[in-house]
Image (tube, rainbow, N blue to C red):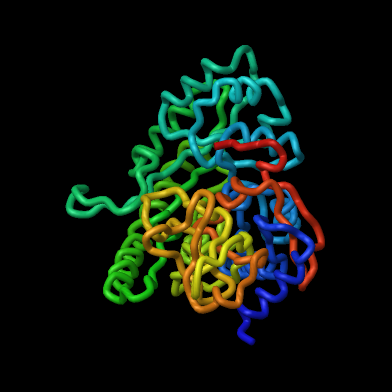
Length: 400
């Protein structure tokens, strides 16, 4: 029996009393992935990206481990909810226009002490000030550095379009704008190198493309390490009390941690290990989060139909954004249908061994987005479900 077949047998036994659709997290795999993130971080604290987890119980589980410290959140409403729930170090990774949220933040000492917001434009400071409604708490802010690699005199760009702040001079000027402004305190710098951390460098069947990605990423790491160090020096000259410099992501942990200028690493997807993180040469992990759909039809030889399953991930539309049939091994989508809203035909010889009501296990393309489809995650240890914990959705929250 292969390791994957053994996992399928365990998951089927563990959930035999549960009807699909359902989602699980294999805690042994989850914990092993957490250990690997810490190993690659080389002693620097890892801040957990909540959008990749979206389950309070699992955020609490990983933050209870030595080496993990703080949450990187994705909306202001989520940040305030986490802070009220006892999370005392929440970095909002994206700018917000949530005026009512900023009014709440500026009026509550506990929230203002726990939450740090992201800015990269003076207009964002204006919005926060206009939203205060009399609240006088000092708002903690973090500046975001644009990590994109610019080539050919800036005519070619590699990397996500995020912050407009690219050079040390631009970051220093923004730092001075914060320092001059009553009611704000600059405490951090964040830089997410998504073109390194979120792009696999071992694309199956594409050796030339894989080599090109590795060359691009090596050049991007060198350029960013030099520029990030210069940015930190420039900002510290304005704000010597800077508390943290955050960088990285699951796919670049060890590279980013090697930079002296970086004080903490961000990661989250590596805990669940969705399919987009299969194609990396720098690390391997264990799939920890899966969902099961029930077989509801047997249309013919080599075909079964499962209920639903059309859960595409965000990003540029393409086959890599689709979940993949994982267990039993050997199933594939009908290329004319793909995963459907209500039904999904699956092709392959394993289909002939599946009966009505059997489970087919899938992996999502991305990590936390799976939790937008399920209210509960069933936590599996060995061949037993030991707990069922609510996702954000299960607690009544869909922040985006």
